[in-house]
Length: 241
Image (cartoon, rainbow, N blue to C red):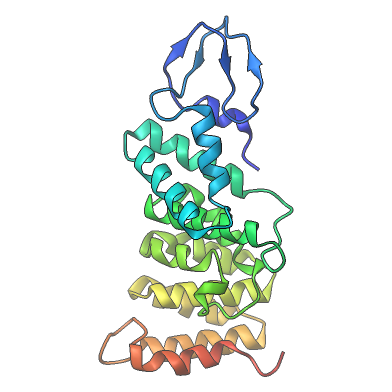
């Protein structure tokens, strides 16, 4: 989990008055120089926006995402603040996407916001949680992280490739293969070719082979053509499991 202190060290604007910490909610003496976030968003406003990312009503969640996106666009400092705050809110061990709708909504809207901001520093967090939802990844309404990872496009490929080589979880590797193939491009095809020779799980290896076949099409070379997607989706479900 990202420590709350990281959020207090982003902005180099200092003051020497009594102030409220960004996430802790308790007042601390600020005789020593310390950063302030007033140029971006007040503590209460930030906390409120983060809470509303998991609000019961979609309108509230969408509005909170818009508020945070608008704040992030004010400056480089504000962007860093918002990214760090959203990542910290998401990065807790007790999330249960199958039973806790609030956790699902937080991750869905938080991931979407991080992708919109092209927050590549969040890719490890997002990719590491691809396996938390076991429903088919192409059912994007049921997977809060995969659409965001794919939205990053080619900048996500190095991190995805690292996870594909390092993960011991075959389900996660299969999800990573899905993201790599969906993003597509020559780099994606090379990554899958390299992974094919190293893969030991029968189902994952079969899906890599299906993905490479789908990428070898004349209409959209190195991408999954729309007419091939249903067949490719079917290859994701391995009958041997």
